Each structure stands twice: as structure tokens, then as C-alpha cells.
Image (cartoon, helix red, strand yellow):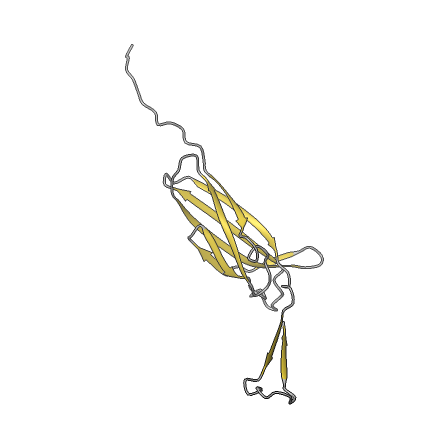
Amino acid sequence: MLTGCFYLDPIILRPGVTINRAAPPYDAAYRGNPFILLADFDNPKPRQGRYDWLAFACHVADDGTEVCDDSDFFSGVDATAVFNVPVATMAFPPALVNRLKVKLQVHDDRGAIATAEENIPVGDGPPTVELGTLKTSVAVGVPIDLFVKYG
């Protein structure tokens, strides 16, 4: 019989990650507007992580079938993902984007991987109105031309 001792590294729990939305006005996904997502990396020990974001534009038809672009429109490596929501998919014929599929992988310093995926609904942004005048319209008491831009 042999005797001896051995040492084992402590078991480190797998990290977790969740995808959170930024504060208003960047918390709602509107076509053509900026949108911000935040990674909440839950690591048992305070260690750094490496982030890999991928975002895909999708269209969900009335019958429930979903078609997503094969290639991502956004990829990032920071804890915060900042991008403009696309208006149309890259498919032929193009369709309006009404869903984003966002995938996130975080690697901790020991190589463990945490993943998260979220489907985010996309809609039309609230209407905007801009009112302006010609810069040459400075006379008092005479008609002026007004221009309105509705978006």
C-alpha cells in the first residue's frame, strides 16, 4: 500500500450572462433608430470577460414563419452593444425587420463560456415633426414660407 497526498483546484462555478436593455430612449427597438444592449456578466469570482455579440435582422410573417438574414448586421466585443436597427432584411425580396435575434457569448479568463440569446420585437418609431422657415424670411408683417417635415 502506498500513501501520499494530492491537491485539487477548487471547482469554479460556470459564469452566467443576461442581456439587458439600456435606459430610455435607447431601450425600444425602432427601425432606423439607435438601440443599446448591455451584457450583465455574472461571474462567481471578479474576473474579466471577453464579449462576442452577434445581431441578425429577422422578419416574422403573419403565419408565424421567421426568416433571418444569414449574415449578422452587427458584431461587437464590448460589454455594451450599440447599433442602428436595420429597416429591411437583406433577403430577396427585402422585408421589413420586425424582430432582432441577438446572440451573446462571454468567455471568462479560464475559458468557460456563458451564452445568452434574445428575440427583440422591432416596430415603427413614434412620429416626429420638424417646423422650419427659410433663413431669408426675416421681415415683419409679411407672409413667410413654413416647411414641415413629418417622419
